[in-house]
Length: 131
Image 1: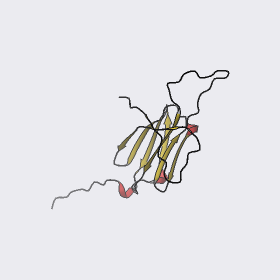
Image 2 (image 1 turned 30 degrees about the horizontal axis):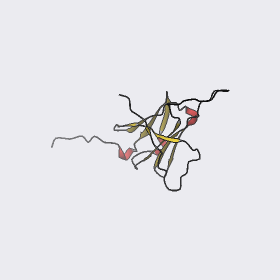
Image 3 (image 1 turned 30 degrees about the vertical axis):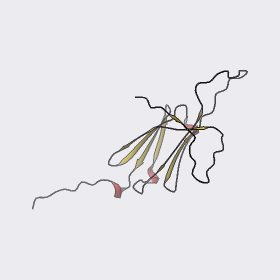
Image 4 (image 1 turned 180 degrees about the vertical axis):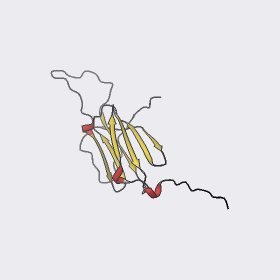
């Protein structure tokens, strides 16, 4: 099932200004949790590995994907149905995530983030003995 990307101006946190006057798309994400990690998958079509930035600052994980508009030499755009813009989304992480082991991969416009849980946050199986 295809998800539609929302075309809205992102609300920047206080003190944050965007330096590019472009639309900001909020990429749809899937979040799946296992006993060892949280997997976050974000759709950012057209973004390549050079233009994706994943940062973690004060427990806020921010994903930014920038797309450069395509221009054709000696041509002028007469009509456009597809809007170009950047992708941005932020998540507040709990203390259960190990920030030093976060992994990010990008393939075909799909960003995958593996957010490993800390040892203390992992579920533990407690054996039950008979008395």
